[in-house]
Length: 81
Image 1 (tube, helix red, strand yellow):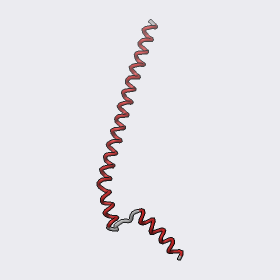
Image 2 (cartoon, rainbow, N blue to C red):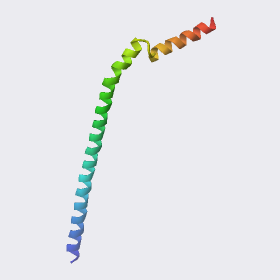
Image 3 (tube, one colour):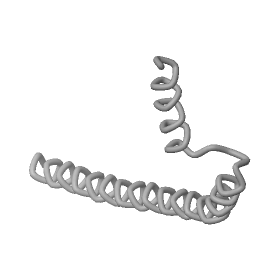
Image 4 (cartoon, rainbow, N blue to C red):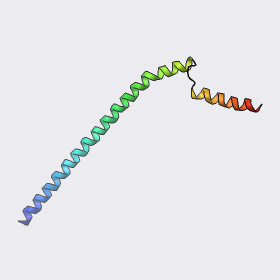
């Protein structure tokens, strides 16, 4: 009697482990799919807006970080003269 109960308990633990493993795999795949979808959205946004940013910099509508860094260092030097 105790032997059957022990076997039943082992089977329950094994089934529970298999279900948890399957759930972990599904959760991992879901997270990876979500990350991949997010990366695709970021890439699309990057492809759409990066040319616009470059155009705005070339037309001097906005300043790039390099321009502002050079200008601020120039202003610092100029202010001491």
